[in-house]
Length: 567
Figure 1: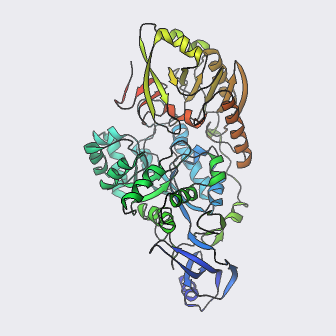
Figure 2: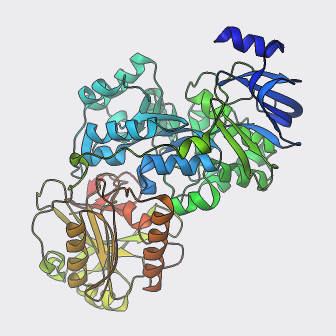
Figure 3: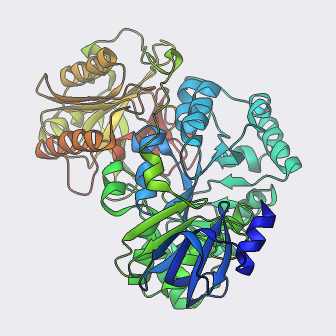
């Protein structure tokens, strides 16, 4: 193979594909120059002046860019199966994904991870999995499965496994949890990358966290926080998703202070399928960075070679001889509209059309099994008049929350006025009967309920409503369809979107799924959910006990700053 690649590089043998008359975006020197790109045997044989090839494509001055890299994402958060998700990423020029399947792992364990590896691994892009490090995310909730270091050892050498997924158990790292240390030691001994997750962790605690072997973090919400993490040696993954949008504030600081960008890359974390269809993922990050004033080639560098180097991906992320022929052809560097996408020298978009999605086995279905419940489960009788109760306060455009309080005697009137809503999390994996019941402010729903089995990270059944009766109807509807989204008005079901794989993903085609998601979200907004609040994605984070400041799990209301339940 290499004999032929060398022959093509020398001009002695025709290339498989020749991209003629292009402008090469060189992220190695941060320059752009005119050249032809000769591809042979799935790699770039030469960049220069070439004439011979089995297929010649005249680019007429279009830009040849390395395939984009999404440095951290959760495929399941799109609610699409890996094949459909990857096809959407490829449409916008992403040829490498680094995904952490901790959503499905929290429901189905190793079986879920194997499914994601098989389904994503057949797609024409580099599909890497970082093994979930926190299943469950904390001991403060009940998940479908528990995965310890022994379980990770069984998976670590599976094809496609790159490193360890985001270590959300910050106290476990800092205060020497034996099980956490076993996981860290496993990946450190193998020289594998370890993703971090350290929202608002600063000072000496950040130092201790990084000193434990953590390599990256994607949770910075300010430039000040990101800069401190860079100074501590972390690679900062600049996140722009659907619920968390941190790119603008971080890159403004980078540009204003002229900071070296070698330890920065782009990621989405969680992004809605409709948003991906409309604007892409990493392509959108590049476009935003350019609009903020970053030089186009530097923005593309964050989207390509930087991510490859952070994760140790050999000869991926640049347009150079001997590098994998993962390339995107953009018409210009403003609209960034892909003309063609290549993976290992193959037209990736055409290759997608020939792939049949993997059929999920029975273990990935029928996972919504809560203990019996009724309207009384959500009743106001659980709140005492003479006690003060915490209220989760949602923030538009953010997954962070604030804290507020209300006296028990005032809950009924506040509920009637729409100032607060009831919120509950039902354990849905093992029928334990665990139910966390609390209060939430800033959602806006009127006369009804919303429920979902997408509830990060343990994915219990989360329901919010204006009355116990509406909540009961919504929760029972999701048991009936075995997971998904549902919207209730009064006590009547308005719409339901089933998610047939672990209550997390739908096997429906992307266009059909997007239409269904848009329709149910529009109905929820029409029913009062506030602008700036995604009716379902934002709600799904209310059960995540590793994000400040206040959350709810199946075990009760949880203060994430004190890392303890509120009694």
